Length: 262
Image 1 (cartoon, rainbow, N blue to C red):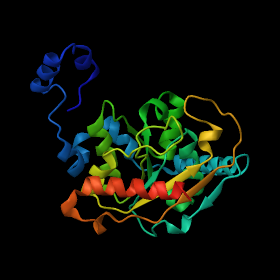
Image 2: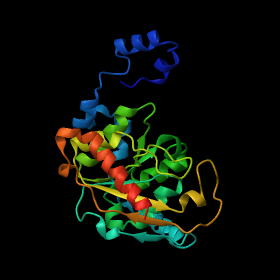
Image 3: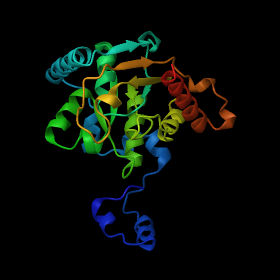
Image 4: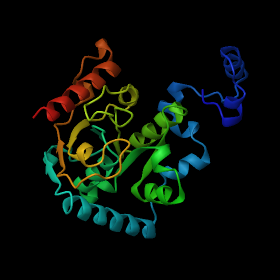
C-alpha cells in the first residue's frame, strides 16, 4: 500500500500507521496486481512516462544520445566489451553495477540507437526528476520514475509495464550507488519482476566511474571508463522449485561479480 503526503504526515506511531492502512488511504493496491496488471496501478500522470516519443522528441533524443556518446568516448576514452552478448531480440533487462551518476550515461553511450529506442530506464526520482531540466532529459531518454523507499508498488508496476510491452529495461539492481565502489547485494525487486516476466538478464560491470565521480562528489577527473557486458542469464534455466526470485537475483549478482573480477 502506498500512502500520500498528507497520510504520511499524520503518522506518529505504529498505531497511526495501522489505522491508515486499515482505512485504505493508500488505495486497494496489491503487489500481485502491480505486476500482473501494472496499468491498473499507475495513474494517468504516471502513465505519461510510458508513452512513446513523438517525431520531434525522438529527434531530440537521438541528438542527446549522440552528444552523450561523443562525451563518453572522447574525454572519458570509454571502452566497451562484450556488446555482442546482448540478445538479438527483446525484451531483456540490463543490470549494471552502480557506483556513480555517470553509470547511466556510460551504458547509454555503449548501446546502439536501435537498442536505445526500445529501451527504458529505471531512474531514481530524487535525481532524474528533481527539476524541469532533468525531467525533460528523463522523458527524452525514456526514464521511468523509481522510488523504492516510498512507492515500491508503482516502481515495480513501471518495470512490469515496460517488460509487458515487449521493451527492454535498464535496472540498477543494487538500488543505490555504492558508497565504496564495491558491488553491493542486489535488491529483490528485479527478482519479483522476473518471476512474472522471465526475460534474459544481461549483467554489466562498469569500471572507472567511481574514480571519476564517486557518490557525494562532483567530477574529480577524466578517468578512463570501461563497460563490460556479460552473457545473458535466462531465468527459465533455473530451478523453479528452489525459489526463483532469490535464485535469479543471486545468479545475476554472481555474474556481475565475475565480470568485476576479470
